[in-house]
Length: 98
Image (cartoon, rainbow, N blue to C red; front, side, top):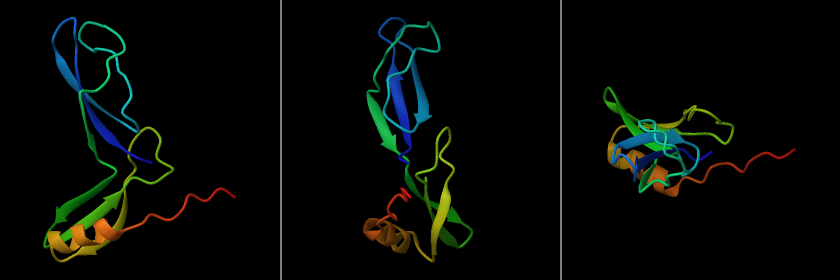
């Protein structure tokens, strides 16, 4: 499942906040309670490359994720460039609908 870090700005109190979710959905202001704000920016966190010692791990949020990304490791590489190269050509397995 896709995973996003959404950024919001309240029209009523001008406060900003962020929230992670499986879509770029509307949210309510946690500061004043104003409702139904769309994100002004969203970062796609479905796939990540993270350093781990001398390696770089490629993580992906699986289709089964619901309320958190539940990342799964899909590869380890000696350099960040190799990890990003792998990710650029990676096609996730089809969702099993049986």
